Each structure stands twice: as structure tokens, then as C-alpha cells.
Length: 141
Image 1 (tube, one colour):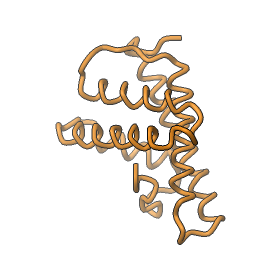
Image 2 (tube, one colour):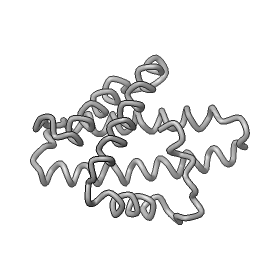
Image 3 (cartoon, one colour):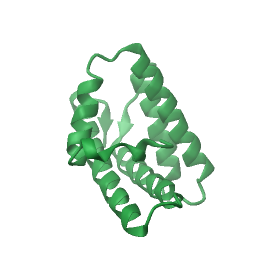
Image 4 (tube, helix red, strand yellow):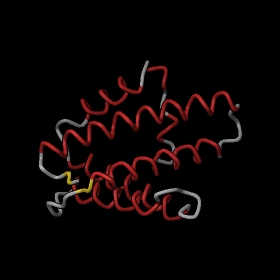
């Protein structure tokens, strides 16, 4: 997630278009995608732990990361509480905002645009995850 928010947005008009592109590129689930995704979620968990005093719902962010790693690697058929998905996503939004705010060569207007874009993306991701996990009976209330 270090530079995830620095994608070339000129290629994508909306967060939905970017999300759809990600989904299409990983449909075959090659082992390398699992490795990269595991590294990414580990990095996210590390950043959340590092900023735990500054992030609301930091424990949900770490739990969501651990669930994602287990799910990606089919370690166990763990179920995810809906509240962890909700709060964990909010934690990811706050983490992303902090990472964006830490860029010094960007104007406040640009930072706010990036934050809004990534908040929309994470909302799209969360709704997709809800639907997917419900279909697999892995989301619990």
C-alpha cells in the first residue's frame, strides 16, 4: 500500500473502472498474484500496527489483513464478522488518508481529490467483498 494510491489515474476514469480492471487482471489467480497480495496485506497490517495510536479501529484493520492473508492462501475456512469488514475498511481509509497527507509535493486540493478517490475505491471493494463472502457463507453478523 506504500504507493498503491499513486496509480496512473489517467488510465481510469473512476474508482469503479480501476476496481474492474483489477478484478479482470487477477481472475486466473496465478500463484504470483497470491504472493504479491500476501505481501501487500502484510505491509498493510504492518503500517496499521505502526500507526495504531492514530487509527480508529486499528485492531479491525489488522484482523481484516490477517483474514485476507488466510483467505488468499486458503489456509483455513475462517469466517469474517461483518463488523470487522466495516471497521477494517474504515481503518484502511484512514491509513490511506495518512499516507496521502504525508506526501509533501502535493497540494491540499490534490490530496483531497486522492483521498476522495481512494475512499470511493475502498467502498467499492468493501461491497464486492460483502457480496463475495456472503456467497461463500464466510461473512457472519
